[in-house]
Image (cartoon, rainbow, N blue to C red; front, side, top):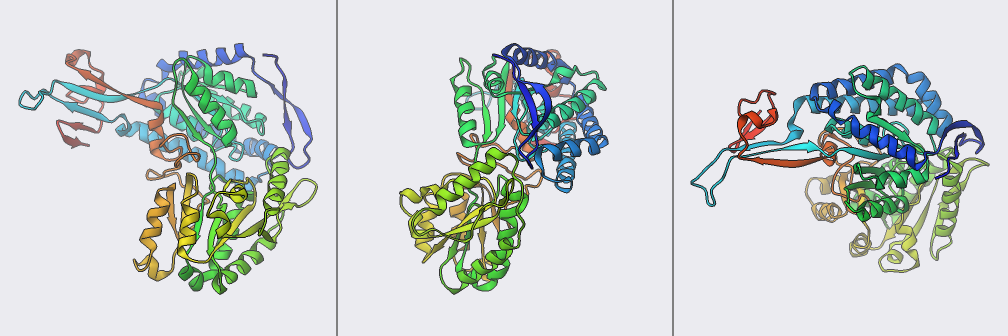
Length: 509
């Protein structure tokens, strides 16, 4: 593999600034993976792991000014947004440190022998162990929270798995800076710096998922790129789990009663959600089922007013800008599609938000309008006007899997009257997170969070946000008839580590 320079590119101008790094060769990928593999023993102590994660958060906060400046130069997301995202990233690292300290993620279960059971139960002790080296593929739209120190890295390290990160080409300089911070944090606790590897380049990403010492992968990006890596992970001589977040339409259903009750509020809320971050959030609402008629007209007027007053913005790179402009034009050219606020080029380097409308009947059956059921990355949403509930249901039945699905209900429907529960059940089959009278943008880092969904939203049933994200990087092992002296301390009767566990059927905390 020939080495090539990696440049930092200004998304405001499209001009490259300086050489940041060199695309990794196959040998360099191999060296990074082997260094990570060799660092596994240093993560075995949970106390050390937790301290490492907390130190990483402290050092990232200490470098805030430098990191935010570098991130803004490469992404144009702005200091306010990036400062908040860095704070989220540090919170996430500390949250996983707390999970490591608690130990419940190990899922300890102990069964003593029971000769009276049918069949008899031998001495069985089960817990979870780390898989090994994890490949992490950074996302473009979250240079902190879904990148080098993001959720995949934090959860993998918390599980006891070293990582090798494939940097995103939109923020290579920031990736180098963050990786250096994580390595300094590791060194403070006697952990080899190879515990966090970093490689650049498309071919390096392919080499990484194929490396025999890589045991799992986490990806956030496009359907096309993620599916190619997913297939490569499955085609290995030893297939590995590939946890990919690929794409999502994030449908919204507005009932007629909700539109009658608060059309203006819904329109304004939709505008804020679809234009947040210049429409570059993975949970941006991309399809809205709204009623035809007077109440729906009021909603569209509110949406028009709010979107028209939203300034043009810069997308993460010019390739995304070109794809957005082309995608809008292709969708707007379909029969019966109208553009009350035309999205597209806002200037030489910016894009303007907007939305399209289409009769829902056009989406109820297979045809050329299926393009409207595909994600268009950027500040665009499609409002499909339905004539009756059956037409809305027909559109929902054709949707692929999503990260989120939202329903806007009236007060009576939210109290249990009407079809609220029925719509909720329809949406549950479509998405990993279902919202009522809210908006999907904003993914809280919380124990109950689930950021995933049926394919193509994700390639597995796991979450990439929240405490249970750690489960992706572990596997269960059961020990049968092993003498106490040979058991891992986590599985001994006297519980020397003070772990929560299920002991002969009883939950002990």
